[in-house]
Length: 236
Image (cartoon, rainbow, N blue to C red):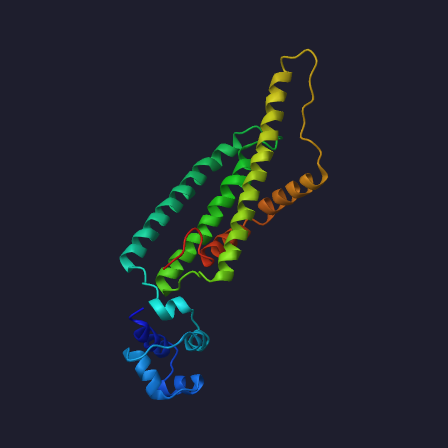
């Protein structure tokens, strides 16, 4: 807190304001602002709250200073790691593509289904997130950590978890159906074990399949949004 005066000065300069202009908006003298910035006096809580509005910041920044910017070398190393991971995902996808043509057709439980419903969405989201990381490194734009964005991040994470659990449930039923089909080959009386008809569930399921097959580019946008809201962690 001993650097409060320096923080006020830095924020004032960052907002392109002179001491006279800031003093006029706070209804104090220019000398009062000068005393704040030199540490000769400290602003009271009312002044600090007004400063947060005028300087477009929060009380923590005024009291403790601006967040320390991420070291450029650290940012470059982080993006190299992300780039390598993304390259591995793309390589695996290219390797799996030819296998799809050799897989038995006519059943939803095939390579194409898994690639489209699981692997591709993750890879596309990673692509969007990766591109935003590169853009952020080049333009020095940082993802947000504001309160409302933090709440949005929680909502997005919950939706992603629901989506993953939903797909896992689909896989469980498909595995049951496959296992039953294989077992029926050795049974005298076939047993019909099929996917349960649940109206809402089936509608949502078909909507997921339609989006994944027809609009896969929605996932890079989701990845970009995840970066913007600071997922998985806050950028300094």
